Image (tube, rainbow, N blue to C red):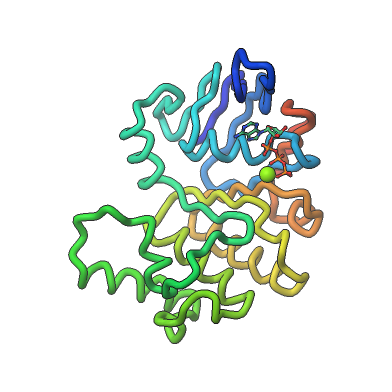
Length: 228
Ligand SMILES: Nc1ncnc2c1ncn2[C@@H]1O[C@H](COP(=O)(O)OP(=O)(O)OP(=O)(O)O)[C@@H](O)[C@H]1O
Ligand SMILES: [Mg+2]
């Protein structure tokens, strides 16, 4: 479902501050995998997520999503693949302050030709599934940590993506909320979604249901461990 072939990503190519963030990386992630990119700070985890999620293009090598080579797609097709395929959960959740839960959750759908009534229904269903419907008109800064987390998950699910990409989702959560987050991801995996998490949190990568660990070091794959 996702394949990288000898992917290399430079930043500031041919400039004095040139840097290779990811070097010659090849791996495969299958539909329904619960995968982790593991590795120390600066090892290339976020860069890999953004390459897979069609937020940036590799300098060389290929990124295949589904049966599509996305590594050289023009921007508007990248946007299309991104919107149809991925749900993103960022570190600290990146919610927009001063805006309601509902509006935050709808955001990935815009611009859209979905009817406003349909849009509202979809958003409310998604929030309801996460037990967040009663908070729909709250400003996000008034939410508890756990509610912010569920808002971020609702936003990642609003376009019904096949693949969830999460970047250090537990970095600012206590153990209880981290466990809750992971059990929600586990449920999504059981609904046939593919989960990919970049993290250096052992609480995440030591979970028995994580079936694929791609360990990064200095932009290179150090080890790939697959169970089942
Ligand atoms: N936009 C950018 N411009 C220049 N260099 C970048 C950019 N993004 C990342 N880098 C560099 O690429 C390398 C890999 O960064 P990346 O963010 O992928 O690491 P990471 O494994 O996610 O680290 P962390 O655990 O700290 O989040 C780092 O040396 C970083 O400084
Ligand atoms: Mg990172």
